[in-house]
Amino acid sequence: MKCLILAAGYATRLYPLTENFPKPLLKVGDKTILDWLLEDIDTSRAVDQYAVISNHKFAPHFQAWAEANRLPVTVVDDGTSSNETRLGAVCDIQFAIDRLQLDDDLLIIAGDNLLDFSLTRFIRYAVEKDTSCVMRYYEADEKRLQKSGVAELGENDRLLSLEEKPAVPKSHWCTPPFYYYKKQDAACIQAAIADGCGTDAPGSLVAWMCRHTVVHSMEMPGNRYDIGNLESYEKAQSTYHGITR
Image 1 (cartoon, rainbow, N blue to C red):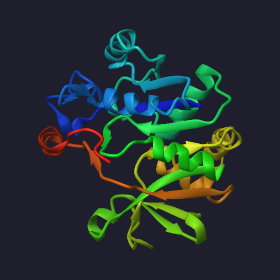
Image 2 (image 1 turned 30 degrees about the vertical axis):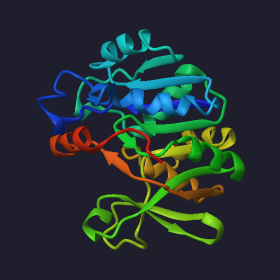
Image 3 (image 1 turned 180 degrees about the vertical axis):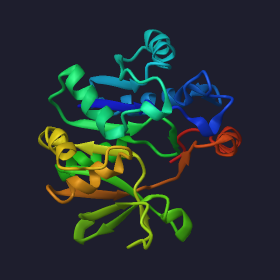
Image 4 (image 1 turned 90 degrees about the vertical axis):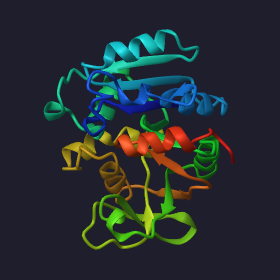
């Protein structure tokens, strides 16, 4: 299995901290956000290659971090240099697949989220289901639902649909940016883009996938810290204590 880390954004809502520095390399406690994520994933012994997808502006920062890391991390520079010219998450995934000639199951994660539970649970779940998989969590606030990817579920965790930022949410289940794609499904991403799949939000790819293949959704057994602005970063710094469940 290969792990792709989505880290090509410009994090404008975190300026000035991220004006010249990538958000995934900000520290929470004594580790960077990326180190918290990858060190946990590596305990699964399921991933044999990690790739950070970066924009051109921040690629040198990620390269320096990767060279000092004990894990096999490759940095993929998508060539963009501004928020206005970014490729979008789905195109970045395909860019990395093409650049690294990947032909394997893929674990795809956002590089700016922290979890207080181990992602190895999600990996085990996906392996047991033997399908592409996502996670979900319950969100009571309708305004937050309208800014998220909202999942519609069938029997036995089957994902029936996913809608990004719906005006009228079909459920209270949100899908965070952690995805597992079977090898044969990952091979369809280029076809999804050609078919008109949205390319900015990674959840748009899930929305396309669940119409063309079987996708399951695991309920998160803990909490997620989405570091999107200065307030959420400060909250993570004061309340996040690593994997506690």
